Image (tube, rainbow, N blue to C red; front, side, top):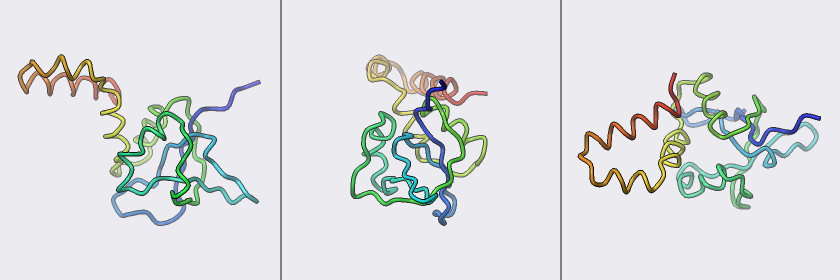
Length: 135
């Protein structure tokens, strides 16, 4: 028996803000399917940063989030895999990508980098970014 993937890459079927990617990565258990009407709750753009951990850590969505009609595009084992898939599908701006990079930078690294010069800090951050989204 094949285990279900932890995340789904969904494409919003409704119009999104121009310049924004219609793709979202969400925990699989957030998907609601009622009579082939597939929806998923998602935080409003202005509250995405403060709610990102809920998505990444597969916590329950908040009741006040709006449900969006979606088409399930792909399943992924990790949030990172979902974002990489999205980047291959669309070059539109993805705020979640920035949040993911910051999530991957652990606090110990930031403390160590505090004693370095700004160029060294940039190189370390860029290296982590490339490792995450590299070729």
